[in-house]
Amino acid sequence: MDDDHCRTKERPKSSDITESSTESIGSTSGASPVCDGVLSPPQRGFTRKESVLMRPEEKLKYFDSQAQAQADNQQFDACIQSLVRCVALTKLVYGEGHLKLAQAHARLAKAYLQFKGWASQALQHSTLARELLPFCSPVSSSRDERIQVLTCLLSIHLTQGGVALLTDNLEEAQSSYVTAEEIHEELHQQGGINQEERIRTELDISTCLSRVYQRQGRSEEALGQCEKSLHLLEGKPEETCSVYKDMAAIEQNQGHLDKAIEHLSKARDK
Image (cartoon, rainbow, N blue to C red; front, side, top):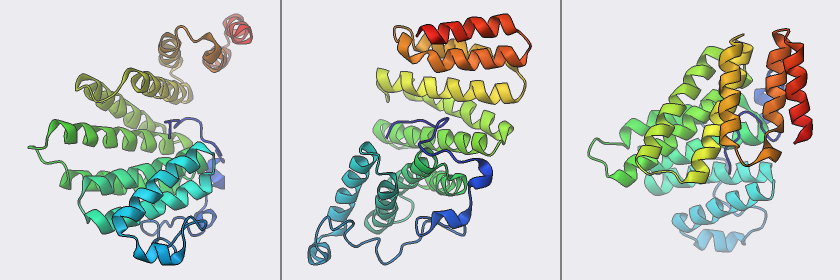
């Protein structure tokens, strides 16, 4: 699932995010409930008898691949159900305090925010993931594990930044995205992220920081983040339209109508 914390697939207004809307997927009183169906076959993917005979490790692998396929096919509700099962199975297979459990919670948190715009559930699971990390990242950990921990932390802070932006907690949003930026740089220095993913994540952070600064009335800083986005999109003019529209909105709010029109003209030309 690609990172897209500023724009969700179904982004309701903050007032539309309610606990009752989660149904059996999540709860604000604790982690997403492990109901009777969590360890049983989804969507008749395999028979109940086959499910009983499968080891938890096999079920985890199955639901993990199902979640990715469902996300790719935009079956977002089914994807979240599979990820809930992954959390339960990961806990069963690896136990508490394992990096894989933190990763499972972080992945579910991102899905809640990206696919449904459910802030409370996303915050709940990203917090659980963050709380688990100190128990699964010893100082003596290997380079590979360090990279996995940093990747998980990056996902957590991007999700929490998205939650804060969605709920208009601008100070928290700024803090989360700035921290994500620092983690991303460390991850890059350690060779833990490829070039395509690096650019995509930098673009995500710069876009979201621009919107945070815009809402805070920090127009110059917001425009600076837009310029950074344009630099990252160099050679991809077809993807710069939304950036120029953001710049036009910032200039218009400052009363700079000529500059706003100039940016809108550039957006139309793309």
